[in-house]
Length: 124
Picture 1 (cartoon, rainbow, N blue to C red):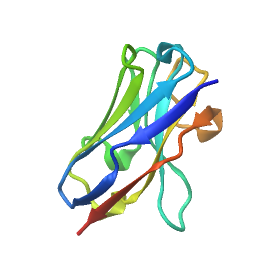
Picture 2: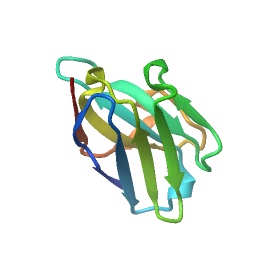
Picture 3: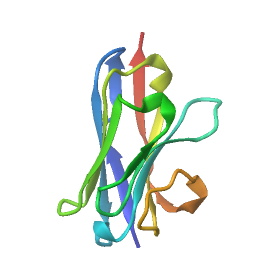
Picture 4: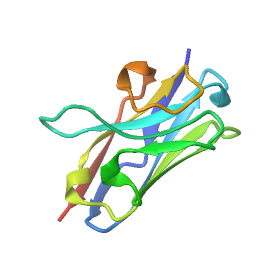
């Protein structure tokens, strides 16, 4: 049974940076791809970024390309989301998710395990 715990959220001014972490327990991290999603109040959950099992392939939603970077450290069983040049529209609860696939995917339905989420608030 895989468990995911996010951390690193908080309040930051527009233009600032945050790094989210997702600690994985229960299984070897290198067995599966990981993703980050977000949900703003009153909006649908949205794909943000994904990374394959080895870290050699990544995918991003267009609105964060060039500003966010997903990475993973399989030895530390942790996945990261570095968020730079943050904008007020990035405000949301951010969720880490694990899929049984080896390749990165943006499809939320393919992720079987989710964390509890961490709040990111960007002030203007």
